[in-house]
Image 1: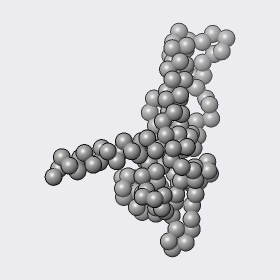
Image 2 (image 1 turned 30 degrees about the vertical axis):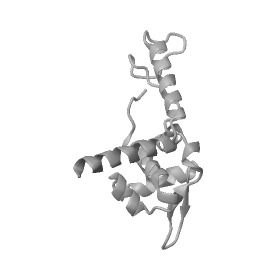
Image 3 (image 1 turned 45 degrees about the vertical axis):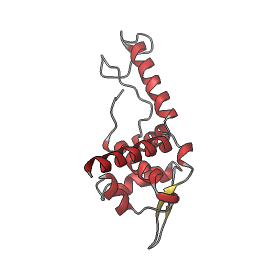
Image 4 (image 1 turned 180 degrees about the horizontal axis):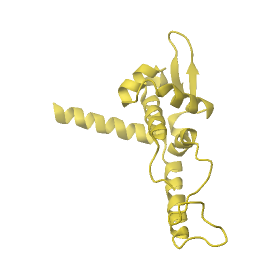
Amino acid sequence: MRLELTRRGDYAVRAAIALASADGGGLLSTRRIASEMQIPPRFLPQVMADLVRAELVVAHTGRSGGYRLARPALDISLLEVIRAAEHEHGIRTCILRGGPCDPDGPCDVHDVFSHARDALLQSLGQATLAEVALSRSRRLESERAAAS
């Protein structure tokens, strides 16, 4: 079990937050998302393709195209975004043995880490993009006020 996101997962979360923060749900270009969220522009199209494939984001092609959320930000969890990008395939590595945990003889910490993983997944499943975007907006406003 990893307790951190890959870069791809990190960038997917950031891109989704940018879309959730978009005024009026308008289209955002990859250039704008990359700039606002400090994501390498060359890598962002791959991440956006993951989000489109997962039906979390809709792509609009053309000169004035861009991306928008497929559903309201309140209806998209962080877990959905992470799963769209992480491609984990459900293989769990044993913390002590470094390979899959043996179901017939699990390691000594198997139950503890399984419960922790389940709690993390539940928390990510309950956190919505709308909540995270609002928190980000408040933090940015506070930083702007402090800088004035």
